[in-house]
Length: 277
Image 1 (cartoon, rainbow, N blue to C red):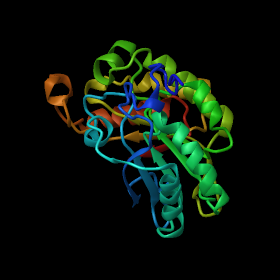
Image 2 (cartoon, rainbow, N blue to C red):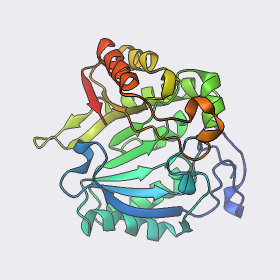
Image 3 (cartoon, rainbow, N blue to C red):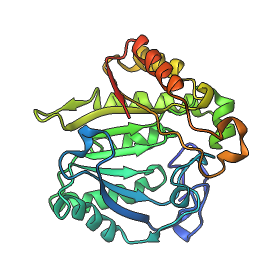
């Protein structure tokens, strides 16, 4: 069946082993699993967020920090049954607070089937859908009732810059539609009495050198079109990895002043739940 899981709509038949933009074929492909305590505190709890790092990606960010997994495709193919076991191991053996599907967009079919198996065997940890924001609304609708916490990036406000640096067309409009659908499904982030995340939307924005991401515009849009109570993480860890050295404007870390300006614009937009990371 032609694959239309993500906005690329490659229309290739992955069932016969063909691979489109994401370079993943007929079987799940996983790099590694591990508890991670450097995610947002509300996702980590005591024993960390259980990271299920999926190989491949539907974006080609020239500054990708996980380029060996996302772009070069590091990882091993596995069965749906094995994928379900990985989810259960993160819950039962590692005690993770959340189960974090990292770069899941192009492997949604596999994840849904594995989740069904794991659910029957006692999986009850909140599912985090950790993505780059380049999502198909139709695919997201299939995840309603499965995903508890949506964690998209909103990377670029400008369409041409998004194409130049991430290799995808219409990124801002696609991300807006996707984030609206995510919020429709799960609403604003809800925390339990221990301040651990239970369900809701969290949005990340990576501050770029010279404000190439368009931070102020993104924050205003979230506040005005989603909710002022949206949990937004303003990220400071931009690092010029992978091919960033080919773009002089990207080939440096951000300054404290640049990050502080982004925080000021987030606060000025009216957002009430701003996380610094």
